[in-house]
Structures are given as C-alpha cells and as structure tokens.
Length: 385
Image (cartoon, rainbow, N blue to C red; front, side, top):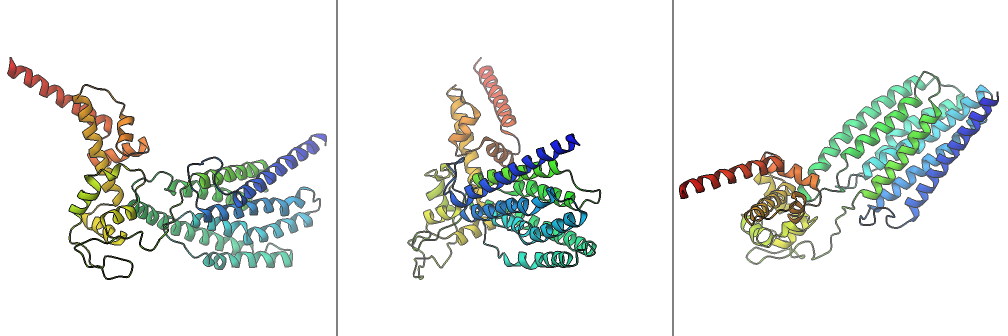
C-alpha cells in the first residue's frame, strides 16, 4: 500500500513537471521575439506561433486529463477519458497537422481542410461523451486509420515537392530542409496514437510523459534551427531592367525572355565569383543579371539541372582549382578549409555535392589526382635522364 502511494506521488510530480515544461516552452515561443539558442538564424514567425499554440494544447491536455489521477470509480475514469479524447481531437490532433504543414515554406497552404477532416472525429467523441459509451470507437478507429494514411501520402508528396522547390531556388540548403523532421515527428505522433489506442490496457504512463518531453524538445529545436524563407517582394527590387530587351511592364519587368542566359550567367555570376557568396538565392541571381526568377528557373530546367546543382558545380570547380594551385605551390591546406573557401558552409554538403558532380568522393578524387601527378613527374624525370 505504501509503495503504491509513493509510486502515485512520484508520477503526479513527473506529470506536473511535464505540464509546467510545456507551458513554459509555449510561452517562450509565443511571446519571445527572436531565438535564444540559435541567435544567428531567423525563424519563420508563423511556424513559431503555431508551434507555441500546439505545445500549449499539450499543456492543456495534461490539465484536462489530470482528474484521472485522482478518480476512483470506473465511471469517473471513463468520463475523463472520453472528455479528454474529445478535447484532444478538437485541439492537439488538428494542431499537430498544422505544424507539419507550416514547416513547408514554398507556399501558404489552406488550413481549413484540417478542420473538415478532424470534425467527424470530434463529433463522434461528443456523441460518446453524451451517451457515456465507447460503442462508436470501432467506426472512429477505421476513419482515423484512413485519415492518417491519407495524410502520410499527402505529406510525402508535399515534402518531395518542397525539396525540389528548395533546389530550384537556393544554393545552400542548410537549415532549410525538413524531410528528416517530418520522419521524426511522424514517428513520435504515430507512437502516441498507437499507445493511446492499445487494447492491452492503459499505456505505460511514464513512457507517454517521456514521449511528450521528447516531442517538446524536438519541436523547440526544429523551430530554433529552421531558417525563414519567406520572399519579401518589394516593388522595383526583385527585378531589374536590362538594356537590349523589351521592357513594357510598370515595374520594369522583362517581358520577353532572353534566348540564352549562358553569357549573362558567365558575366554576372561566374566571372565575379558570385557563387562564393553564402546563401545566394535564385531571386538574387536573377536580379543580378536583370531578369526574374521565373525565366531563370525555366532556363535551368531546360538545361536539365537545378539552381542548387548549378551553383554547387561552380563551387566544386573552384575547389578543384584551389586544390591544384595549393599542391602546385607545395603547400598543404585542409580539405575543409578549401571547401569553405569555395563557398560551402557545411563539409557534409560539400562531400555530397562533390560526389554528385565528380562521380567520386573528394578523398578518392584527391588520391587519383595525386597518383596522376606522381606518374607525370616520373615520366618527366625519365625523359630528362
């Protein structure tokens, strides 16, 4: 008896700590302007606000389930679970979908379909509360499984589209990609759903609370490390006029596409080494050469490459040039240093780009390059002798 009381007290303390943690995290996200941990990154304000609201719903979830910690009769426990389930389907479930959608910054997706999709679940739970019965649970379970399956298919498609959009518009993808976040969050949310709907009795309460802590910490990290990609269109800024091409729009927009951007890119990007600038976007490059993003994006599409691949290929060529100059001068420089001098902000990104461009890793290429130099030196010495 004493051991059970001590166990209950420990769990109530743990439960209260998780509730307080969710409340503090929510207040931090909703009321603080700017990041406290990743100060160099500007977070999307929309994602910050919606994540704060979602974590607030987790804190409220702990509040409306709290009576179950003190309930003694089976009827009280059942009513607490039914009311809590109804409130969860009105808040926590739809808000989790909102957070996933808001992470995608290629366009602002409408959120009203989420209300339409989750309304039948909330209505079914309301009927269960009114009748004090779980008779509708099997039907609702089938609907939820179908809904979650459809959402997973939709999100996979949207995340792939978002990845293509990033590669078409940005040279550096650090702090922008979200596919790993979707995988992690989907696993956490599915684990919540699995344990909540388990027929093997009540799920392990400590596991559920630990899962809440993991979810809160991960969301806080994701918000703090995701860059704001919103494009602020200022009249007369994003598009510049270019002599020799027809300009008829009121905002100096080039309305006739140049036949070939190759010379323009060479003049304004390759020769001045504009590709060495960190985080240069397609819009900025288009402004530099005097056109708009749409025309330049179509040009890269016709070439069969993405903007990201174009910039990274130039950076790899620059790295190769620096490497040859360094070895010719019999100097030693770390590969990472040369990669950073070539415009890369991440060594892992450099390795991936190098392999995609050269067909081998940087280490393999340098080994082959060293062997070729040794063969050339031996041939030269032989001819001289």
